Image 1 (cartoon, rainbow, N blue to C red):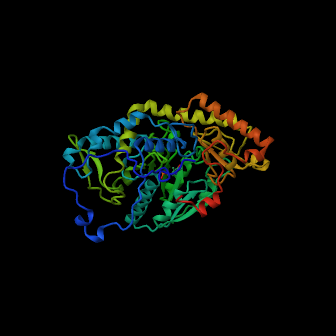
Image 2: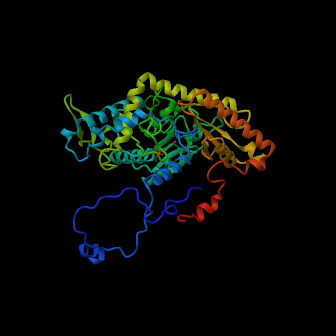
Image 3: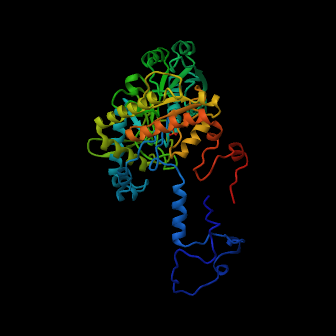
Length: 478
Ligand SMILES: *Cc1c(COP(=O)(O)O)cnc(C)c1O
């Protein structure tokens, strides 16, 4: 275990020494009023520059990241983040710009934002897009505010949002935060929304249905057109959680499926870093009917110039200061330009191919609850292994000994001991084959000696932790 930087401190060590200012020195007491003076020593660590560099570099090497290991974290789309994204977002014209800068000095940034809005509108099949929300969950929140205002304007009092039992937790949370009651709809034996159960729930009290398609089992909702028709018949809006957009780009779109509101996670589908790697971005797109409800301002083009349009008639207002996480927008736009239309379609095709390859190779070693073709991810259950003595957490920990980031575990909630595996399109055949052989080896180890597997991880800087104690009595200082 790395010592803390405070434990490495030795009094008098310095990284940099400044030559004196060439002025008479005065004690602080003469320069500052007494109430502004610190009473205790601040006790900052004292180290040399190489000490500091080694300290942080070594810490960073204890981490798992997409740049170091295979990271099949389902639902999170941990694809490779092309380094050109970083170079483009670091261009001085982008980093030196201030959000308060007058429009006439920001036209380049506005052009980029306008073109990204348009690209996302085309990819999602929506009419208009706002780049403001800072994450997927924030996009959901903006979407729910739009639902609310739309029905208020229509003079309709609808209090419910229907959400499948396989949904990501942010969906009910966002609906609830906007004052809605959440109604759960169950899944059928094919891992999809049970249309008959849904029919029973539809009435004029329902404002929207929130869906993810492909859903969080990685399964495409075959009845989506029937569902959107039913929703329309009852005047209900359809919300699309775009976290799984990586499965369908250029093949179909939420617009074609009949959705009215969509959020996109730029940090998932469009290759901006996430998970400790940087801020997110969750643009929200809407159909023509809802286009006057988006957060203001939008970035428009009048044929001559790009400008900020604050005149959004029914706007829910701002959901974030300024215009969104601009650096992330640059990265996503770079990615879209690099891939192009055909490239984005190929991304989705390869993501689906990689997931199906893993699924077919692993389904005899682990329980595959829904044995039908998957999209960009699939869910295995560790139920067999649990009976043999090692649960899904144990499998996840053992994977770390092989330098593989565990898949998403215990989500979605409808599969017991679930492992949600999303390889993404950027992984090679060799990496996938290595994962397959490691997963098979672990299944074999559990059969033979479960007690030993339960000791994992044995190669990581921190071995198996007592999770209850870690949560209840965290050691925050030592
Ligand atoms: C990631 C994710 C979200 C939330 O997105 P954030 O950008 O993390 O806020 C919502 N739904 C699904 C299915 C997700 O995978």
